[in-house]
Every structure is written in C-alpha cells, then in structure tokens.
Length: 199
Image (cartoon, rainbow, N blue to C red; front, side, top):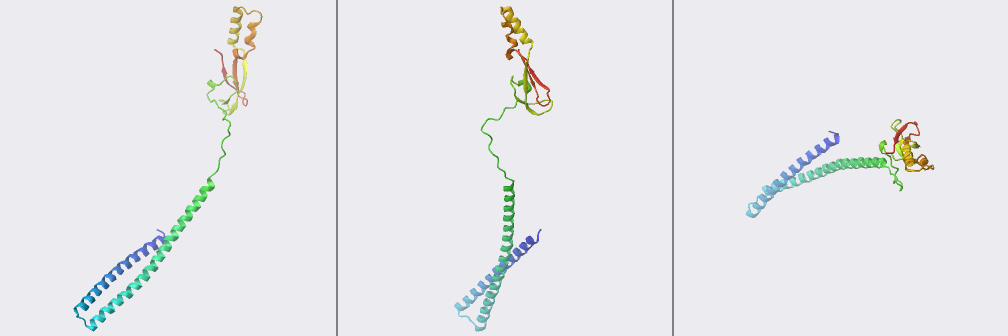
C-alpha cells in the first residue's frame, strides 16, 4: 500500500470515530434537554440542578463544535488526498490518450483503379504476360511469354493439308499463336515457370 492510501484509511477511521462520538453527544444532549424540560413542567426545579444541567448541555455543545471543526478539517484533508489521486489518474489517462494519439496514423485511400490480379497457381496462368510469384526465386513478377511450335501446330497443318489446302494454307498454323504452345518465364531468374499446351 502507498502512503497516501494509508493516510486515506487513517483519516476515514478518524472520521468514523468522530461521527460516532458526535452521535453519542447528540443523544446525551437530547436526554439532558428532555430531563430538563420534564423538570420545568413539573416545577421540580432546583437552581443548582438546573444550572448543572445547563452547564452540561453547554459543554456538550462546545464539544460538538470542536468535533465538527475537527471533522471538517479531516474531511478537507481526505478530499484533498482523494482529489489529488483523481487528478493524477486523469493526468495519467490524458497522457495515455495523448500517447495513443501519437500512435494513430492516417492511411491514404487506395487508388480508384483496380488492383492488379496476382495469380499464384501457375496451372491457371493465361496465355498473355501476368503477375505471379516465381516458384524459383519467390519474387512477384510479371511473366515474359513466348510461343513455340508444338505438336498441335503440326497436327492442324497435316489436317488442313488432308482436307485439300495444298496452296500454302496448311502453313497458317505456324503463323498463328493460337496453335502454338505458350511458355511463361521469370524475367529476374530466367527460369521457366510453366508451359501452356493446346489440346
């Protein structure tokens, strides 16, 4: 426990004791006043007894005044200590909130154009250059593509020759990328990523 907590507990104990004493004196004063009034009504008043009772009532009043002054001082000290704790807690909260504000940063909104699509599954790559992750160097790159003659190209050539295209039309599959195999290659490490075959 800190010293301020000990002090607060001590002051609260003293305040309880003073309140108890104050209640006892109030009850004693009421009893004396009731007994004095009964004597006055009964005309059973002796000068000495009445003066002694009045003196007791006056001394109780003086004690009550002293207790109330002491109680007010203790209450003031108690409030000051508790208020100082509250102010310290509020200052700590303000400091923490200011530190949290320092940690806040503002992010600019993303651009209005759509983000580029990155295809991670190399089996699903299209026939044109695409953003993907190279399996060799693990870099995100835009692939290089090139076409090469494949068995499909030769098959279409032979089929068109069989149909009757003997005037050179059978060579068209060699000029069109549609009948060729497409190979994706990494521009950084120059390794082959995948080959897309027709048929």
